[in-house]
Image 1: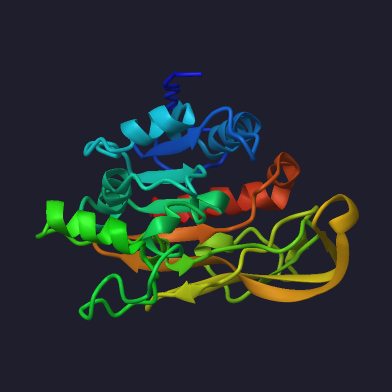
Image 2: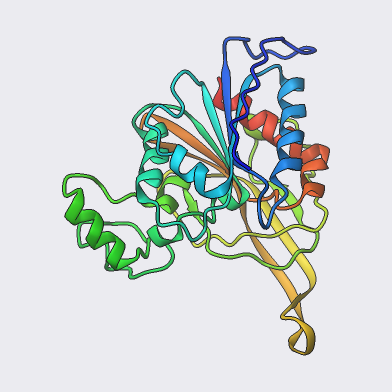
Length: 287
């Protein structure tokens, strides 16, 4: 499936305070392998209509989309961008660099959802902590061969570390069981969520591999219960008692990023609380 959906709506809906001149770009892939990105895109469109955003959906098949996301003008003319994709094993470093530049250098604020955090693992998960050299002060473990090739080809350009860009790097998740979502603080990006938070349907709790300086935690996820791992005769049940930051805000160069790690399933996207988090977060970025 190869297509680029362009849906531009400039009508204010209800009591939205967002100006019709503010434009939002939603970037995804379809149909998706582990996520139903088409169903999620349709829910996003509903949220966008309710919010009154002038929005564009940029969607394409996985590998074709990677090529298109290397466009240096990707977010030109937009006031915010939302990434909802899954490129875990991609080593397309030019695309990685370009997405980072859209926010750090071009000033487009970004919301990064769920598996977007589990993307471009070669830049921060699958590698050697010493690969980035003595000048690197972060915690990423990059693929040494990829770093070597990058430095040979682009000696004057910083190696793009996706985990440093998202603010909280994540490398794995727990079982799919309900999660209690709690506020860490009061913030514009979570203003519609009740003080007591909410409980998700079955969801994945992403780990917090490392945090960069400047991260402000917004929501915490807590999972308690029983999980399973393995299949068939190897399937085992184990006790779950974990928590992690699941939503945050972090400055990035000329702008900032809001990360939200929930949103694996369509059922999560259908929850009103989840939809309000997207709406509030984007409206915050559009401020």
